[in-house]
Length: 491
Image (cartoon, rainbow, N blue to C red; front, top):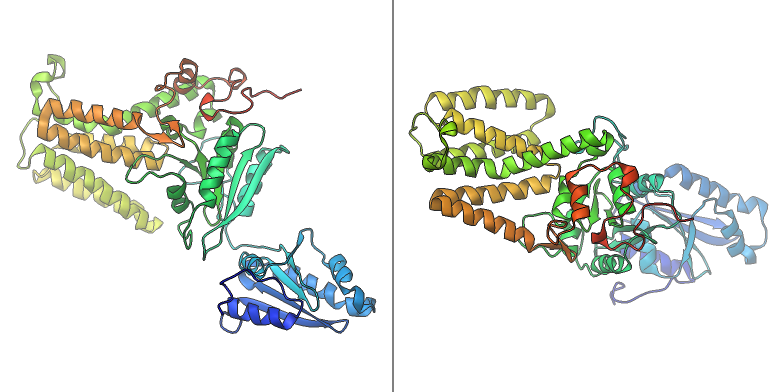
């Protein structure tokens, strides 16, 4: 009979436990499965662990203490109490399910069996391989903290806890994936986050049915948010602990997935993806200027090329003062083809930069800009004005703080370009209207995507347009329906 077919309790006969562990973990095959057996007071003790996920120095200390039992104790009948008192670690748990023992061992914990005892000791001595916290490449700031989340879920929850030393901060750990058993942590502040929101996210996570979350948080997001083919991001990713902590204080919930250096913020709106930590590291006036500049860059990345194409194909729409807009000479290739080829060429360069070793990326950029771009203009393949507007549009997309939002805006830009090229003014108007209506109908966990514009909330709009000084931002965003609306300590 398959041992995985039903729940099996820990055997009091240690030889049966050994047989089970060998079958489930492949002790004779997998080199990284650690196993140690000792005789203490005439009774067998067995340890099971994964060598690459445990702190070997702690294992050695535990073994030393267990061996010393032979020198200091004589009562074998009290072995259970003796072993319980001698396990020198701050986190020791007793479990009675063999499936749970296997899951814990594969998560980096040590399982200890005692002959004649029908429970297993689980000692948490995890020491996952990984890097030290460092500033994320995509969320850099001029002033501010330089630490960032890593691939270690224990370190990530600690980085958040360091910023919110509140007894009401909750970190609920779950295991998702039939085979991967990936650790997933749901984080929220108990007296701020809405209970219905927490329960909804918790249920979505627990209802996830998949063999493994090998792609970590992105795979889990697609189970939590049923986006289907929608390109716009309905959750926000961040690798900065200060950003995550700030959202927790507002009433959001955070989902952390082991092996991922980013966390998921829920729920989010369109304007959450336009925020950046740099705005809050500067004075309110300059932070507002930075925010307006970013809004302008996003609009440029989305509407500049379609609007310029509309003016080129319909120059009668231009006032006399702007009559200079448009190429002076018609090239050998239609303008729409030039725009698409040049913009897709920018995508080629972006993808090449991702896969190019860092020492060579600068040289690749020079080759692309100087040789390819200039030669393409000289041979008449591209108009200089096309290169100008495509470059400005690309810069605008890179200014967008959220990579996911920048990618979605890029797809919408292509839709607008094609509709404008085919149907002219009507195509541009219809494409623009479709884009707005599409965003209006989106929801992230029942949260309107364009809030606070739709539904209209004047107070929240002021917080979107301006970087309000912190002493005047006393209320939490109403969109998350927090239990406690005021960001002031309760007496």
